Length: 139
Image (cartoon, rainbow, N blue to C red; front, side, top):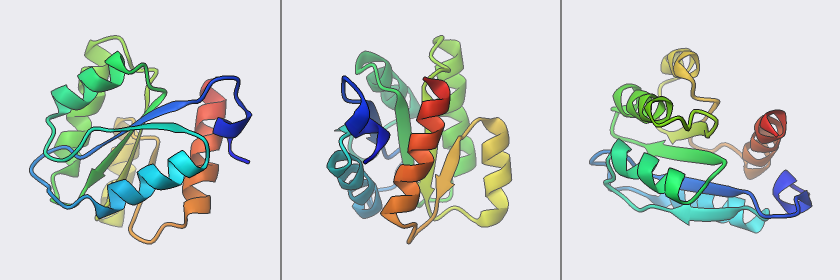
């Protein structure tokens, strides 16, 4: 059972697609996996700005933001989300990412504050166990 199923209240996670990327199959898959595990998921839809994603995350009082990107702009867009969270005093919100992100970019994303990066084909069990561990460490 995931951490979400063990809590007194459901842990909220926002899944968002920043930038001009319109392909959301992976984001919807992750959203479904998280919902099935007991998380409350807010899916913000495609083509959102980092500002819209951060504003929604704060309004929805989420514990984490999952960003999905296939366009190649992950370094810029993920950095902007992290920057906005810091500016708004919400850096306690965990940020994780996924999509077609080259492995050589992962260390830079982690250095900027992205807690985990899940590439195509990452098993649901790996996503859940990683998020459980990361969220438990912040509790």
